[in-house]
Length: 263
Image (cartoon, rainbow, N blue to C red; front, side):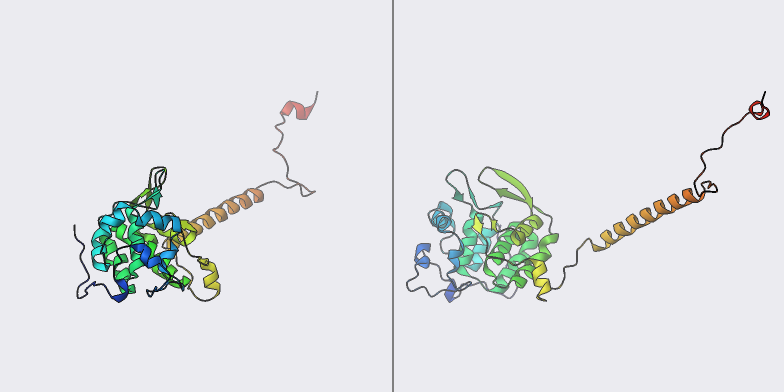
């Protein structure tokens, strides 16, 4: 299955997206002239051990050779699970290899937006791949939140491969992991300030929960129940008998006529 590219756009490689046959060449600091992320080579966002496993893997050599932003899309829509490394040898998953390739290509922002939006509506693993790249590549914390938070409403299932085996997760859970955890898919993520900090700094608007109205209704129902129970207790106290000392009388004694008349 081939991906449908955005109308009127040609996803062709630019100068800084030219393919290097050996990724180690792009990691050589001598003469590196490619795009920078956080002032450094984007490929360094992956740890050295992981980088070495990727460039030595069969999938990288066979399936990632010569990819650009357009042909990588065809590979991404073929993904059927996410993950970092797996097995005793900690082999990299195709998902991790394509994320590494995206860092090497550093495509334009509009291409990543297409991966997330139009492409992601049909291909959930393409959306997960683009979200992972956004978390790695975007340098402004507020842009990371504003780009990824809309997909917290995507509840489609994802298969995830781990070192021990397989797990079932969801797109929204994966996005939440990207926003809250420091390590995802065998990759240490760049530091991301908490959302509340950005709100205090007026860099983000407070997030409106999709369940806001339902939560308000639940709070109102709980308040009505609490008020109703309090009213019942007050009514019970008002119906009690009070003696001259202000103490409530116990139930009246049942005295027979014989006891009243005596012997």
